Image (cartoon, rainbow, N blue to C red):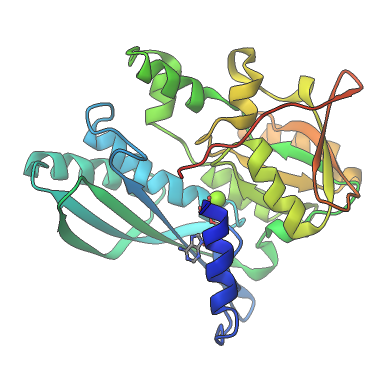
Length: 312
Ligand code: ADP
Ligand code: MG
């Protein structure tokens, strides 16, 4: 069974149980409106051998990454992360020193964003280290961005350059641990401040974070918003000009969002003025019965064979 097949089956099975105000499965976080405010909650797991190799990432880096991938899902909702819960299953060969260094990395990033650690669980594992983080965000309900809010005519943006993480992973597998892309792969940065800032802008419609690659992740917005997209290959901000890694590589953790066309130029210049970095226009939301992406290169349509990253 595919990852998304299992999620769809779970969503269907549990749909009839009262949600007590929480939004249903399907977005980067679930949302609980409380008056004019919202709490958002997400969880992500990192498994040794699947998401990381212990000899290829330092414990500090893994601590930061475990938190960063969760902060990214909160940022993708347009609000600020405020607290996390951290659960760790340690295998017998994981030393106390490893655990301490892991915690130091998790703490350093928590401090950077002033995110409290308010709970968790600690246990042992028979087969490798497993880490689970729950992240909680809070902000004005009006700022919450959902995958379902893209409108036909919106401009599609990504919040930074894409593909460095996938290229870095290739470098690591090839034994080149010291390349700049390998360092990026081990030290993913969530766009936390950017997510909250974009959340406050009403012209930003749909938003999510890129964990599996643009080609795969954009389809979540398209299905949720019942629309399609045109993407322009030459506009993709591909690291080292490697478009396949940029489009189908995983773990970039940049924001993907759609913006009302009339406000797009203003948003671009305001973002640049605020963060000193650009956002990148990569396409446009269009009508589409089957919610697909149409790819163009210099005005000509083409059919790439790019697939998103999957853990299954
Ligand atoms: P992300 O990449 O943003 O972390 P995922 O692709 O992992 O999101 O998950 C997509 C949606 O499915 C999310 O809303 C997530 O909460 C939900 N989900 C994933 N796995 C499960 C599960 N085992 N049970 C319930 N919901 C799940
Ligand atoms: Mg996400």
